Length: 253
Image (cartoon, rainbow, N blue to C red):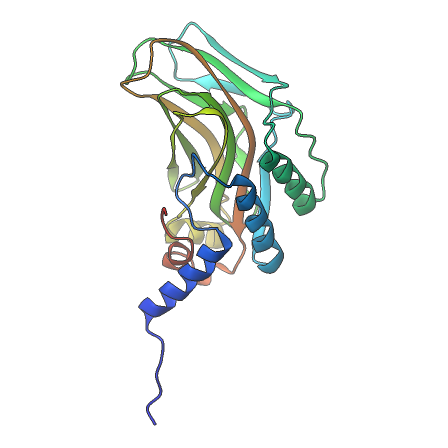
């Protein structure tokens, strides 16, 4: 009797359906209709898949200084404020953070950026912590961030860095929405990055955010708020990293 095997393509489909059911395949999720459901599915994945690790990179409670670079604006204000999301999904995120890390997460403040756009499409800003944030052992495969905007035509991108590799950039999408949003993006690192971690112990570090003004952005002052920067890490042995991660976490919906 002929034995029927599973082709590589079929395996990819099976893995994709599995992670789709957990809600972990995503592109930038700017206007998620069910952010609390996303938090719940992430909590489920962390409980059922031991290889995943939760890393709260920044809670924006004021312990780490931040600043703006590469901007010619006369108005460049960065400060911690008591403006935080009121959404139930944010409360769920705080609870998940405490459960996953075993540490108190107060969730009482956020980081406000107040600056000025003089030349739409040309102006950009780089928001950085004073010191790079080193990500623990494991490949970052997803980033989560809460952002407040007032319909600004700005584009946000996340930047990581690694020795011998240089800066790595991921688009987080346009901030043309009102109020707080929970943004998620998948992170696909090349095989060489995992090899640099495994062979030379070169960690991945969070460098900062770049904010780019779009052609239809209004000239004048604007402000944004940032809260709860989270990375989900895959701690599986690095032996087979590369395309395998991209197969399971996929691209946008």
